[in-house]
Amino acid sequence: MAKILLRQGDITQIKTDAIVNAANVRLRGGGGVDGAIHRAAGPELNEACQKLGGCPTGAAKTTPGFNLPAKYIIHTPGPIWRGGTKNEAKLLASCYANCLKQAAAHGCRTIAFPAISTGIYGFPLEKACQIALECVQKSELVSEVVFVCYDRRTYQVYQELLHQK
Ligand code: ADP
Picture (cartoon, helix red, strand yellow):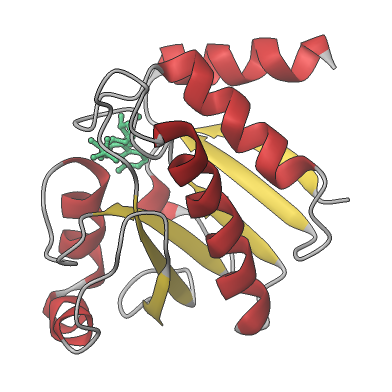
């Protein structure tokens, strides 16, 4: 089982083998964590992304980390919350599962996730954190998972969920 760690801060500073980007389906740098990762990794990241031909919601594609301390960036477009009836929960779970698969395929033992879909995409925070934990907790694909919480509220929600176990 993977060890789970919580950190508050900026995912672009994290030195895991891979960090995950809450991307958009065109893999063009946008706002939020996506914009921060593109700015910190440098312009080569956008060039690499454009060669990938986009990525469907729930899937994941990998690039090098370029100027980041992480070796790889795993890009996954999360679902946009549309009230919960458009398969949002399953799609979010497949983001986490596919990122873990990509990490293992690239020989990564440690991976850091932002709270995918909980910003601009509007997924309810507690539900999203619960899905994230369920997906990674039983995984044997990596040895360590770091949930990087940009805001205090996200950190608190993860902490409460972890202490309930
Ligand atoms: P989405 O479009 O998938 O909702 P966002 O980037 O809007 O993605 O938000 C996802 C989460 O990432 C939010 O919790 C947001 O606060 C957080 N976030 C924003 N910038 C960073 C960062 N530099 N490092 C880690 N998390 C971040």
